[in-house]
Length: 316
Image 1 (cartoon, rainbow, N blue to C red):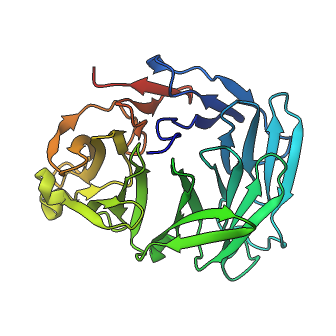
Image 2 (cartoon, rainbow, N blue to C red):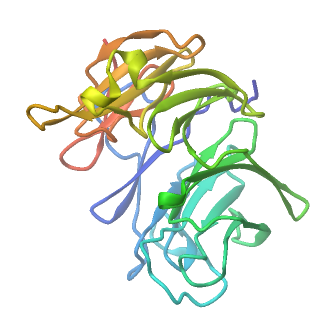
């Protein structure tokens, strides 16, 4: 366990065009108020966003750049994505900060943008925007989600639509990006354990979930829809690409399906022992839909208020 293992990253959302940061370490429950707000530069369409832990600056991606702004809205730096964008196919560049906040990692869906035949993963100096490292990815993705590991590395889940999902982990030092792909293209990364020793994936076809050891990815256990008491054919049930670690010992797992008789869609949230796979029972997440449950790793989770701001909840 590292020094940063218990430091939960800020929750960052785009609400009414403003980048809002919320502190999940605060004890309050209910609708959370932003601890900082950042307004993107005029004309910028925000694709993804992150906020420095000291609340001094925000970072975001557009279709053509990574941008850093201060709390007063002034632009501190802008790093353009190299090459001319000739396509707009629903792709969204993604970004994420390392645990120490010194590096901003940028996923570039350059194939979908018409810039290249493949995508790129880029590392920028978070303070200056200077290029630190870059590598080509053997993907043609629509978007990528970053997961910050407490040990300093970054994990990336690249969604390639019908072609599946590819997961990478990387570190950057001395001008080089050390890229380690996982040996599958059909598993979606859902969450990291708070101590960084395990991670959760869901099958791209939504048939099962797996808890893996980090860093190697060895499977610790697998659960299918049938294990939750649903015949997948009868209930048309699947494991959703949602949930994560409620706390170090407990997973939140979401099942989604359609009632064959009424044709009504449904979703249900379950607690699962993160070490053994034992199903601990259903709980009411109060989520608006099957993707609205965001575990924080400390026993609480976030849903979304009608205002767009997060609502922090616990079982008690």
